[in-house]
Amino acid sequence: MSISTSSRDEEQPLLRRSSEMNRITERSLQYGVVDFTSSGLTPPTDAIVVDFDPLGDPDNPLDWATSFKWTIVGMLAMMAFTVTFTCMSPVPLASAIVSELSHSPNPASSSSVLLVTIWELGEAAGPLVIAPLSEMVGRYRVINTANVIFITAIALAATATSVEQFIAARMLTRLAVASNVLAPEIVGDIFLRKLGEAILRPMIVLSGSGVLMAMSLLAGTVFTFLYVYNTTLADMLVNVYKIPPEMVGSCYVVFSLGSAISVVICNIALDRIYVRIRNSHSGVGRPEFRLPLAIIGCFLLPLSVGAYGWSTELRLPLAVLLFATTLMGSAILLATIPIMAFDVKIRRFLEEVF
Image (tube, rainbow, N blue to C red; front, side, top):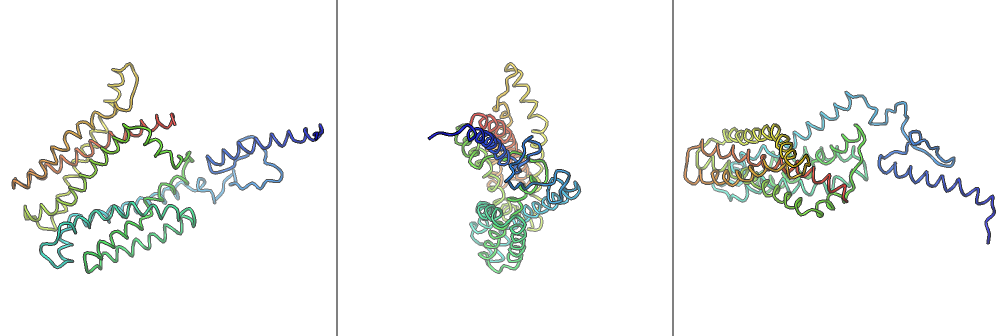
């Protein structure tokens, strides 16, 4: 069976057009749009091209007015603030809330701990439902439905008559938080396009580096002390130092003060330390050059935790406890911020390898 010359001549344009379409498809997968104009190619005559108007399209989020874009960002930021405020506001009075709802002067300490930490269970489970639903039915429906559930759950928590109801409402509140899941995607769509990472790439990168896994484990361990502090400080202030419950919240400010000090230190010294060590190694930079401050933070953390616990055990003055709390906040941030910088650098290196 032979192919005529005319048939082969007809096939060549088709093959070239197929190659062109493959390149266009790759571009569409990267940027989410088939742009024939900028690629210098012409669409096939039988193709249906769906694209935004290059001269300006009100349906294109990238063409929206800057003021409107920042209005959306502001609304998302306020939603994120509401989520954080809802998470942290019951923490100083967790024991008092449990005591009042259980009608017992000495409720189980596990109840107040669960009241604070149940939020994280919802934070882990919520995105597993919200993210897929947003792809199936759209972000508009999901984020508005989630907000209604969020407000309803807050109302349930406010009217709860038992510890179990309050804890369940807290978990439902976090399950319904859509802003933390969808806000990055919404902001990404209304500003400059960026190449999205593959879904499996973070796990591949993480599993490809034992050092990165160790740093992640260290950061997770350091983060646990934040909840040790959150779940114990209020009880110590009320039961040991006899601080009125309405004044307990003000004592939490010292932890934020220590955290702010570490942020300032890292902002000033992190890059300077990196440049100095890099210059001492013939100008060759390495991700681990970001870690000296983390070593200091990891050294201070057990000292601050020990001082935090023993100051109460030995009934030392309140100022000692508050100083230990400040030192703990500083140590936690001083350990985690350099690890985050190290994580960014080593991920970029491993992504180039993989």
